[in-house]
Length: 240
Image 1 (tube, rainbow, N blue to C red):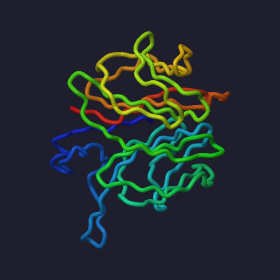
Image 2: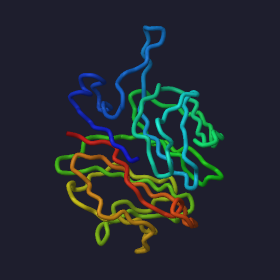
Image 3: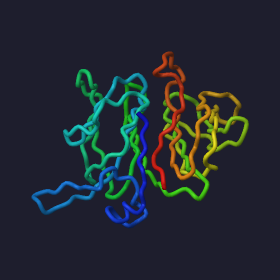
Image 4: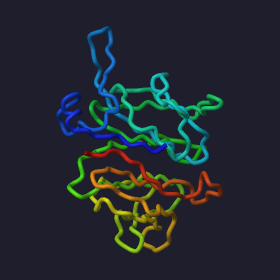
């Protein structure tokens, strides 16, 4: 269920806000309170990154945020939420058993990527601010996140080519950086400083004007298709 958000700069400039943060609010509408107050909003893209967790439902302030259950490795796409302090709760979709509850604060007019991470015995929330900007002409933008809680430190490498990001451990990440667009890449996650391949993302096209997150996840001790080490891609945004 990997999703991306279409960026129409003209529409956002007219309808939403006029700063560099006019990016990814999935809905520009803001709920009114008592008919005369419009609270500021943030935008969140939630990814289920905790191996072996069941399909999840996410609630903010007792209101369900996802339309369908979020399976391991999937993300919700961006949705809007009131800025400020919010009570977040994660539930097993089938049993409604609570998996984790936390209080999370969001700044107004800001976009975030939020991950449920770590092993299923000790899940935790990992939150990143998405400082997204339009890639330069002919380029895509990518960042890398390591969300494997038991793997060694890793590098992100173009197969047979350059090291793009080096020496990231669990919850380590890079900033968004340009890479030539409209090309196919095979990306490998290596044990840091070595040629040992831990996971491969094969023959993926990175389009010009698109903004991507490459994320490494799973368990070094994993034994099943749903918990072994893997690397995947999230399309955060694209520009026309």
